[in-house]
Structure formats: structure tokens, C-alpha cells
Image (cartoon, rainbow, N blue to C red; front, side):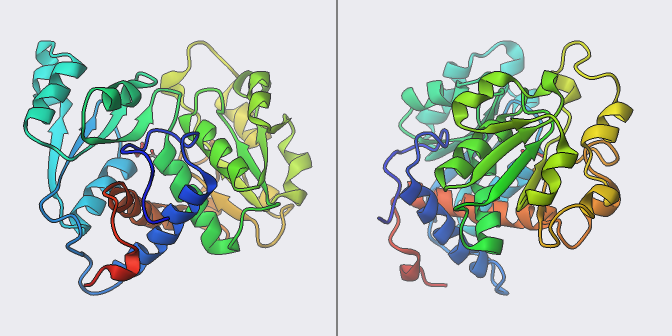
Length: 314
Ligand code: CP
């Protein structure tokens, strides 16, 4: 298998285990490429990528931009705030405009769940979901999966806790699907108001007691408290949240010595993770960011139906 079966990358659900492995193996190749002095390869020369972000982003947006440039694609940054969207142009009309300009890839982040799925049905270009509402953030889940592969070679049998605001998190939904698909045991943990019981349909275990979990974990993935998505008070205070669910230096001491500490960013230091823990030897938060570029290069490349990476010359 050398390419992905769909023209789009919309969610983890649509990917097979073999496709996830292919994305990770290809990302490894591209990570090697950008540790060279010349960091780009000409594999997408003549192709165009448009990034369409209706919600803010630092990591995802920059890493898609860099990935496109390192593959030598033409990059168009669509700025929603300076576009005709502010004059009331609809998503479908914006998309038809891009289609008329023969854009090859559209990378979209949108507040509405399934907006990229709608887009994909109305355009021939490849659509990549860079985060849609609470629904999915598949490229984050793929870079998280790749980052664990780099450290452990396999996710089979690993115990992975995802801690924090599960209810409002598209990262949690996509991570759960990816980690479960690759054979890990996933436990979601946080206050009951942020860890809904209906997540059991994903085949996860639920815990409201982080301290009990810590000694048995191989990986802990901490999520940001998403104040902007919460309506009403879902826990007594941030101080209370920190007391019960933050990964502090004291809690890290209760963990296995080689536990992998992850966070998709942006970090709320002193709320879900202490500063000292975010920069400790177990934390791979910056490596996740580096790997995000490699994984997004891999996705662009595989959606183009490229030859095996061995065939790419410098
Ligand atoms: N992890 C993530 O999606 O970060 P950004 O919102 O900065 O893109």
C-alpha cells in the first residue's frame, strides 16, 4: 500500500490500521528529510494548497504551511477576517471560488462539526480536516500516534490516559479512535462534568481519580481546559481542578520512570500541567510539534497518491 484510499483526510474513523501505519512510516521518512541542510523536496511542485482557518490556530496552521512549503507546493493563506466571508459569503461560495482557481488541497479548521465533510462532497480538491467543532482533529491524533511510535515502536497493550476536558475536545475523540485502533488501552480521566459517560461507546475506561491511575500508565496526554467552549461552571474553580487533575511534580513521581507526557497545546501552565513537568525529560510536547510537520508532509504526499518514499530524491 503506497497511498490513501480516499481523496480526503477527514477523520480517524475512515482510516484503516494499515493506512495509519503508512502515514507514520512515511512521516519518519519526511522527518529525516527536514533534518538535512536542505529541508525541502520537490514532490508537490506545481500543486497548490489553500489553508482555510475559520478558528484560531498556532501549531496546526504553521505546521501545515511548513509541510506544504517543504514539499514545494504553492501555498495560499486564506484569511477569513480579510476575505468576503465578512461580507456574508457562504462556505459553499468560498469553496466554489477556490475550485474555480484549481486549488489541489484545502486544509480547513471550522467551528462547525462536519464542515470539512460537507466541503469534501462539493469539491474535487483533497480536503484535510484541521479541526471541526468538538468532532475531530485527525492530524493531531496521527501526530500523537506517530510520537508514541517513535518512543515505543508499538501502541499494542500500552495504557494511555487522556486527562482533562474530554467533553469539549476534538483531540480527545480523535486520539481515542487512533490509539484504540492501534491496540492501546485508553482511560479518560477528569471531573465527571468533563468526562461524559457516553464516551464508553468508544471502548474506553473512565476514571475520576488521577492519583489511582498514575502508577500503571505508559502515556499521559493532558488536555487544555477549554474555557471558550464551556457554558456555565463545570468544576468549582481552576484551583480545585489543578488540585485534583493537574500533572504536578509530586504526581510525576508516582508514575513509571519512563512515562511519556504529552500535550497537544496550547498549554495552560499551572492549570492542567505544571511548568516544571512541561519541560521535564518525560515530556515530548516540543517533539509532538516537530512531528506534526512530518506527519502533515506525509498526509499531503500520500493523498497525492505518491510513489513509495524511497523513490523521492533530494
Ligand atoms: N494542537 C492544536 O490544534 O493547536 P493549535 O490550536 O495551536 O493549532
